[in-house]
Image (cartoon, rainbow, N blue to C red):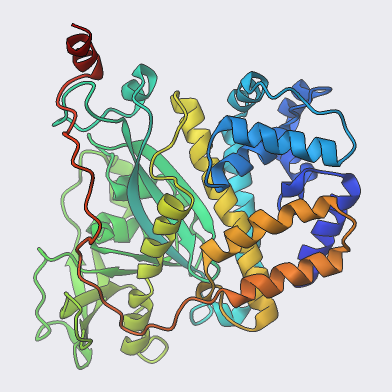
Length: 454
């Protein structure tokens, strides 16, 4: 993994690509675009340059197009080329021409590449674990965005933001995004489990899907099992549990049988008939003894039925690592500022969403390389520390510093930013900093401006 990373950096420098070429090569971008890449021949904003500038816009604190184009001008001058125009219109036009399928393909390639190179000791009992979770993102209040991703019903027109639901599948081993889906926030078949069903084609034999109780429905489990994958999920609170029934495997550990419910409206008769009449599942009660934790007891449901190969303690520890998905989403929404996107049309919004995930995967790859060289797991290293280090070191690729020295400095700096060892940490859900005492927007902004002008 380390040697491949160094070779990629050296090759990018030989080709004279922009800073991000060290993390995402021009050849890979051109291959993802296919025949569409020929449309950009002779332009300053080729597919590779457009993607690299878009990545810089998504990853850095200042998300403005003006800052992104200024970075391109700085690189061209440092590379001995004539500066391009500081007007952002050409960049915005090129960004609008990016095909969604190409951006999505880059997302899948960057995520799976790092996951496939992960050493065996990073995997859970030899399995690839898919950590699934969902969230929401907002976007500018434009007519196009409102039509595709309507705001919450309870908000008055002009007083809210278009909102989309997202579901992201993370690799538990390296933290990269392996798949993602975006859809409307409310309405039929727009829930997190419905979005995840659209991603089932990614499932492989003996994968383990790790999720919260929102995904614990009978059909959610059956459809995953039909593809040869396994489930580890918290049991829904409305489904009763009685450890005196079923086949006992140990204390607070037994096998039960869930009968198939009636066919739901969203499922075809053929698909319904292809599922078994019942599921054999394993239920494990987990008692939380750490002080300060809100939950004191929970039941984990899994399709991993062998208690010798998969001890109850291992299942419990695996489910506890499900929280890693929450931390990864927090990194995307807070550190990379993906909680509110900035594009004004749905097509650009989806590309911006994919580009944030691609940038996140590239940072995770650098973290994985550093972790491999340091003999630790990637989850022990800070994503924000890696982002800050890349922010300062990537421009150094345009200087005469050797690739070996640059890579060594990068790995050494990132390896320093270790997540603090705070076992069983807990904090109250309160805020110390008070919000500004502005009134809330109760009607469209134009109404306020009309009254002010009068």
